Amino acid sequence: MNKVFYITTPIYYVNDTPHIGHSYTTIACDVLSRYQRLNGRETYFLTGTDEHGQKVSQAAKAAGKEPQQLVDEVVEKYKAMWKALNIGNDDFIRTTDPRHEKVVQKLFADLHAKGDIYPGQYEGWYCVPCETFYLETQIEKGLCPDCGRPLEKLKENTYFFRMSKYQDQLLAYIESHPDFVQPLGRYHEIVNFVKSGLRDLSVSRPRSRIGGWGIACPFDQEQVIYVWFDALLNYISAPGYGIEPERFGRVWPADVQVIGKDILKFHAIIWPALLLAAGIELPKKIFAHGWWTIAGEKMSKSRGNVVDPLKISAQFGVDSYRYFLLREVPFGQDGDFSETALSARYQADLANNLGNLLNRTLTMLEKYFAGIVPDPAPGRKTDETLTRLAQALPARIEQHLSELAFSLALERIWEIIDAANRYIENKAPWKLAKTDKEELAAVLYNLVDILRLVAVYLSPFMPKISQLMWEQLGLPGTPAELEITKTSLNQFPGKTRILKGQPLFPKLEINEEGARCS
Ligand code: ME8
Image 1 (tube, rainbow, N blue to C red):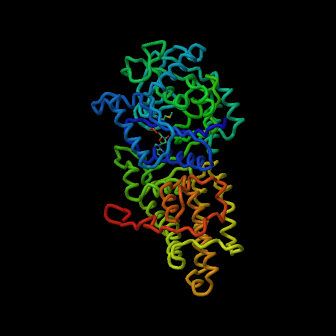
Image 2 (cartoon, rainbow, N blue to C red):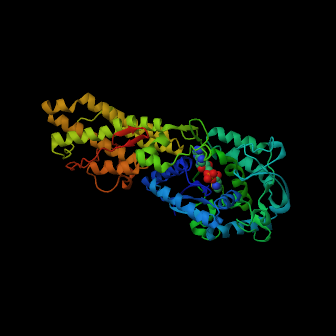
Image 3 (cartoon, rainbow, N blue to C red):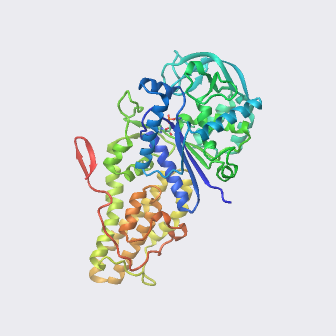
């Protein structure tokens, strides 16, 4: 049986509504899984929500709600957001799902039975917003070294995970798998961190202090399992670890786990150490992308600069938003979000380039061939540049997407769009209409053939736009159903009646409130 392509996002905290940062990771994973499906591969694309922890219980308290009530409300906002952004996840895990809680308790008990979880006392500092422990030596003036907010001093009974025991094994694994952590800069960061020594990790909190919101320790009712131990296990609980061995065997190990750089250590150190302790294979790749800021500032409620993906998508269209996030900044690097930059890309890359190419081509087909694509004449002239770019495209996209280089994959697609627009300028079909009808037919056939290919490769990135292109080209079904073998040239069915419709990218109206598609 073929291995399913397994891809994960982090599971997001439900203390607040989702913003562009959360949508970034989820859209990236959506593109990768759509691309795999396009290639005929079965996918298991998992996202979900992290519902335990002090952060969530404090947010509930502040809102005057029970934690369960808050999480039930916020999870709906995540689900609605993913639907609106056209995210095709195959599963959605909540850490309050019984299917998840069972696995967490079982693994906690197994590691305890094995001696890898042992009782002790934790003394140190804790950051609630980061849900992270810090040593005295890591902090200054009682502030969190990661987020700068005040820390809580803790001295309490706990259970420790014997992480130090797995230091050498983890280092050996990482060093022999240079692709395990990406991009490369992050890989070196993790190697150095592991070399500097791993300490055992406190993995439970006294129920009395945190009010009991979390998964109970199976053998000590006084303790609740630490939120990160709980959360990380979602990646194996969802595909059925310990419960559905056959399904788990087809899905695990994860092919790629996409996260933001903020949670790299949890995923590249604690997570593989837990898997080594449990005797489970490690994921193939952990990719940590960069951070979006707004006018150079961190997004936060208190600054009032949090960007709502639904608002931006309503202004520019969902697919333009998806395109912008993945085209503007190389995945792995930080970026600054602005409506001005999005507007510029909308105008230049989308409306003037892609939109215009489709529009011009279809207008000429209507004008010169009554809206019917001419049959490809045997031996008709093709364009050398377009043919070369089109033939190279599948392998290039494959290469770039296997490296999560979304912006490069999009650049390759736009090279073809640029070349096709130049082809129109060079061929001047409006002149050929008067002098050489056969050549005119060849030019227009080549153009729709290229547009068909563009729609196929754009479909993971811009599913709605590529579908609209497909329909306007008069093609049946969807571009994402096409087997990848049909992405060679000369496959456009002759005599197809095109269905020119509304422009793909309507003009932006700019007013005091900003830009909006008209
Ligand atoms: O950390 N730029 O959840 P979280 C880019 N529950 N990406 C961003 C971003 C930004 N400004 N802000 C958030 C948690 N993200 C844990 C994870 S996993 C077992 C548990 C994205 O709600 C990015 O993917 O704080 C980041 O890693 C994640 O949201 C953090 O989401």
